[in-house]
Image (cartoon, rainbow, N blue to C red; front, side):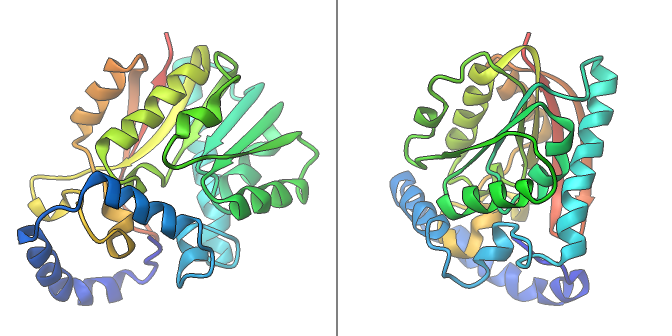
Length: 263
């Protein structure tokens, strides 16, 4: 969720803590309910803060929007150098493209780009933004939030880079997050890299993922312990190689970025 005013956010924390404490004692909503609420939110681009939460240009401040893609590109280059892989992927897919901030930064440096999202307007917006900056071929994929694997059919063992950032904290459960990791494993070529970001929790119970009220808690629905995610990804066929932490930035807190490689 977009929360650029860090001082203002600190002032709101007592109220947030009370709200979180109440939610902790309420029963969890079912996985089906949370999935339905997520589908309702991301496919309705008329709701308040949707453009900001989808990271559209104009929804985010232009400097934040530009910085977002640039920082992720530099992070990938650092990971690529450490892993000894090409910094210019032949085929890249971004899973959860939002408004195109990452795609615009990466597109001039890849041979071909695929952008996937549960929101058809976001896919179209990303393609438009990429076309405005370079001539890299770009294709769009609309993802069914209830059956995401179907969107990846026919792309198995083709991608050199699978990018998925600011997505996994938004999915309704850890199981949904792991389904995306399984999709990444299927799509990547041998030696291909997945750059994945998760929101990590700490020893504080307040940092744990939510299990209700998706519209209110969307940016904190799913969290992982860093070692927990590292192990779970490896168990699904992607070897965790590197991790870098961003404890806080202009958007939010507790970001972990991992480089996962397909053997």
